[in-house]
Every structure is written in structure tokens, then in C-alpha cells.
Image (cartoon, rainbow, N blue to C red; front, side):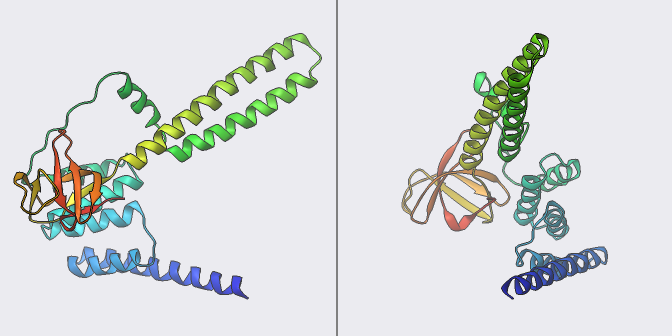
Length: 247
């Protein structure tokens, strides 16, 4: 009986989510951006999310010249669909409304090469590659064990070697990407003006000031303060209420 209730609840949520999404699309096309936002956010309240949903939300906020929410939702869409050209283009348009111009310091060296390689896939994809490699190893081992011809044994042995290599490579890549994902904690400044201080104290001097829409990276938290870092390496403490984490 419980299973039937869970299924009914699931299908009801799916129906209302789809209905809210379509309603939002209709309102957006009519130019009713604020009402479209309400419709889209009603979908988020059902714990349903997608790159398309966040993308449409970003477009609504962009039309209303709300910089921080527009950039935030485009960034959320990119987290779900990192290589979508249309999302990237619209994000660039929204970023032109920002006041702050933060240069990104390019990473170099061996660590950069490793990061570029492991970033080809998400950590869960690397995990599936590891499972596939382990399965191949088992199949090659069975072939090697039961094969009676020397040429086949050599072939299966070589296959086992390759499978082990890809298994270890994919496991290490999955672990590295998982750690990168956990350590990479971006956020968007939502306050119109947000002072960044040298210490997590109200009376501490301001080191610089950020404005809405700027992307920062969370380093650590202390009470109601968050230590953030910019893409150029500059860091400082900001009040938590002034930023909204993307993860």
C-alpha cells in the first residue's frame, strides 16, 4: 500500500513540475517575467531541477536586469550541463552587467595537466569506467585461464594488462575529481555592495569591496563569516548573508 502511495506522490510531483515548467514558458513568451519566475521556482520547490529550468530562470532575471539572480541561475545550469554553448553565451551577456572585473590567473604546470585530464569526465563517470574496466579484466582473465592456444593466451594477457591500467587510471581520476568537486565551492555575491574584510570581524578594515553578480570561491566558514577567494587569488572575509553558494 505504501509503495502505491509513493508512486502516486511521485507522479503527482512530476505532473505539477511539468505543468509549472510549461506555465513558466508560456508566461516568459508573453513577457510576464516576474510571473514566469514564480512558476519556475514552484518547480524547484518540488525538488525537480534541470539545466533548462535554471537557464530559463536566468533569462527571466536577465530581462528584469537582476544581475546576481541571472548569473546565479546560469551558473547553476552550467553545473548540470557544463558544455552547453547557449548557456555560456547568455552567462557572458549577464556578466557584462557586473561592476567588478576580476581577472583569472591561469594555472600552469603538471597539476594543471592532471586537472585538465580528469575534468574530461565527472567523478561518477570515471567510477563507471572503473566498473567497465574491472569487468573487462574479469573477461580477459577467464579467456586467459581457459584458452589452450598460446597466441590467445598472449592476447588475453595483454588485454588483462590494459584493463588493469585503465582500472587504476579511472579510480585515481574518480578520486581526484571527487576531491576537486568537494573543494570547489563557488558562490555568487547577491548584496548590491559587499565589503570584504581582512579578518572575520565587523570592525576589521575593508580590504576591497565586491558588487552583485561577482563569482567567489568559499574557503572556510566561521560563525556568520565566510572566507572567500577570487579567481585572481585575492581573498578575504565576507558576511555569509551577502553570498549565495552554487552547491
